[in-house]
Length: 478
Ligand code: UDP
Image (cartoon, rainbow, N blue to C red; front, side):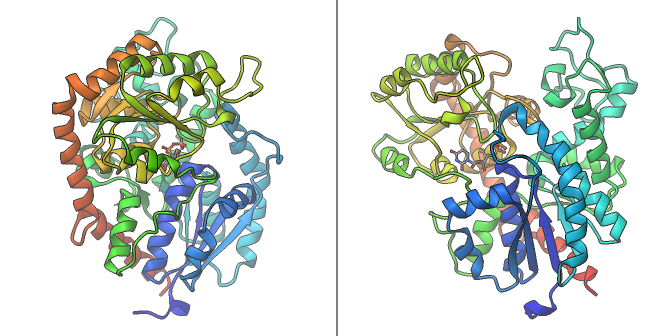
């Protein structure tokens, strides 16, 4: 084995949000396990939360070449950093964080041999190029979504973007190669469902995604057996030298730790919030496959009226449920927040359980879980696919609209409830998922879960691609 002090030094810089940090920390640990030196650059705000709520520092202390560094995200301490307000982050990172990052690269010792920057953070690409440092972007979204973002100019040229006021959203899009048979206007990532091509978020996604394909490679948290068709399109049509699919990262890390006779302590997580493990004891008392797990991720906010539709739908379905409800993500109509309605909490006690934040990976692999009502964030989707848990998808924004279409129409792993929030539909979908359509969905779920696990075991596609990535990084150090 190569001594750590001679190993290449990789600097990893995630976009400062839970889902991004979560998966990029897993990549960081995988590289540290391979004896690479890793500097993980967290925003000051997130690092403070991470250190407060997890054993992260002691967990990473076992890797001699690993260190955390922090950088301001440019937002004020009291900025909400959830919901639509997250868009402020892009501007503040470009304006405030970018020059600090550049200065940091002059000072960091040893200098990085390679930067792995979040693929949505074009500033990492710009600075690395300016300073002549190799850069490999990591996109935390699906290959499908990267492909749709990279097809924005094709959609504009075909006249499919901007979306016209009278457009039937159920019509198929024709200009995203490989998706002609299932991609509808309503399935486009929310940032591209715009009525003006000058829309700043659309422009940003097109710009940052085009940088992904000009770098030294592209890392994706997905696996060949899940997104092979899209990956072929990407490999044929983009000029990206290498696309490393190394996911599902949470499962990959577990497998590699097992190779070294270590286990991922079930208490360790990368959460910015206090994890409430009491839900595991509650799940232990529920019958096998009987519980619907409900979570809308770390950023989405749920207006009170919608929250109540979900609650009535769940209660009326007669099924048991475990619900992650973060008080700060339930705003009142005036935008202020007074937490989860008490009538909902009280009325849930008979057949349900509510927590602020759950150990999601452990929850999804618990035998009592029978389904996942999810916002279709990419991490949640992959975690559910790997655990073989069927989904009801209620996408909120970003890539989620596309993920939910893949779940229902392409992979047959669940039901897509997008754009509808009605208690009768929720009740119907819960019953379909848990009873009526269960058998056929479970068949696909078991198949994709097996393929996910196979991909990260010795000789599997993601396992080999990670080895290849590590080898290519080592070459950068020669
Ligand atoms: N998560 C968690 N506990 C919860 C809810 C979510 O640990 O109660 C984790 C989940 O496992 C996932 C991440 O938070 O890894 C959410 O990422 P995702 O991409 O699904 O959604 P986002 O939060 O970015 O919208």
